[in-house]
Amino acid sequence: MVHKTIPPAAYTYQSDVETVHNLIEAEFYELEKFNSPSDLLSKAHLYILWFNSVRKNSGKENKSPWEIIRERDPSISPSIVNFPPVILDKLFSEILNYYSGGYHVIPHPWQKNG
Image (tube, rainbow, N blue to C red; front, side, top):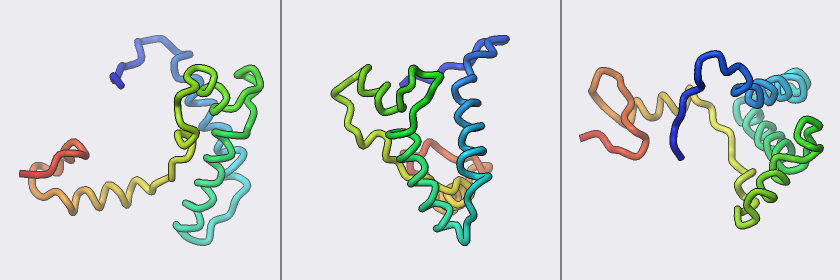
């Protein structure tokens, strides 16, 4: 994968991401209640599975993300839609504790300090 930046004034490049964020807020965060961080992660994981494998998107020819992926490359494993959510603050804190020194700059996740 190669990282690319969005060109200036290319407003539609971000539209899919913004649409997903809006849907997640309306369909998940505004409807669900969470008793604990583990409850949030459990419910979020189920929502992600449903959203990516079952939920049809009228803006994408009434297909789910998994259907679009499968059409583009049938060799991709269905497990691609099953990724667990993480609490980034916790992950960030764990990485900072794992790596010491260095201006509080977190190294590449696969590099160990020293």
